[in-house]
Every structure is written in structure tokens, then in C-alpha cells.
Amino acid sequence: MNTTSSTRCPCGSGLVLEHCCGLLHQGENAGSPEALMRSRFAAFALGLEDYLRHSWHPDSRPAQLGGDDDTRWKRLEILDSGETGDQGWVQFRATFAEGPPGRQRWGVLEERSRFVRHQGRWVYLDGEARVSRLKPGRNDPCPCGSARKFKQCCA
Image (cartoon, rainbow, N blue to C red):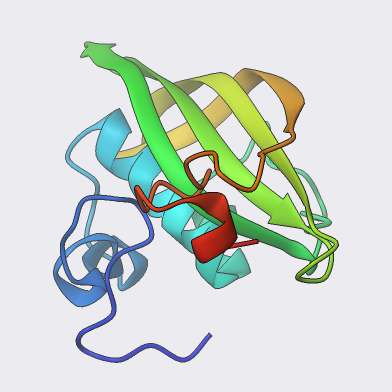
């Protein structure tokens, strides 16, 4: 994905990408499990497979990520996060759209992810995930989080 210096970070922080998750994508270590989770969401949204593999614990990292090019990650909500020593967790909700515009299907991935420090840096270990479908109405708030009506935003 082509980004510019004014591109907002997909993680929802409100910051510019290059001053937010872009720093982690370029090699800076995450200071917390939540920071790593935000950077991983941004990497999924931007298609940064190398970063996703690098930020995954080698014992649980899949051989192939098998991402769907048709999935567009729209919104990240952090519900809870914390750390104790070298272990951490993040509970989040990620909203996505699949399919062509006008015929797209919406969904939400909710996960409680586990993170550990490995070789001095936080990495994703695993998580318990649940996916559910959304059916936004034309006058409902847009699932992307823009605060606009669905029909005026992503519909």
C-alpha cells in the first residue's frame, strides 16, 4: 500500500502512521503488548506480511499467513490490555469488510491475544478468537468508526 507522510495510522490512535506504528514497522521495539497489537493490526491493514511474521513468536508462527487480499481491516478497538513480567495480553475487537464495494460483507473479530517477551522484545504468541457478522443498516453508524451514517460512508 502506498502511504504518504500525512497518512493516519490504521490502528486508530489518531497519529500519523510514520510517528505511530510505522516506527515499529521500521524496526523499533514495541514498549507494550498493546503497542505491538496496534502495530500488528496496522500491518494487517497495510499488507505488511514480513512484519507480521517478525512480530510472531517462532514457536506458534504459521508457515503461511494465508491472508485474504479481499479483506479490508477498518477499525481497531482495544477492550483491555496488560502485562505481568514477560507475559502480556490484549483483548480487542477488529472490524473488517470483505468483498467488492456495494456487495461487501462486514464482520468483527474479537480476540484475547497472548504476548511474551522473546529475545528482548514483545511478540504475539496466540489468541482465542471469535468472528461474528455485522449487518449494518443504511442509517446505522458506519462500522468503520467514522461517526457518519453507513450510507454516507462505506456503503
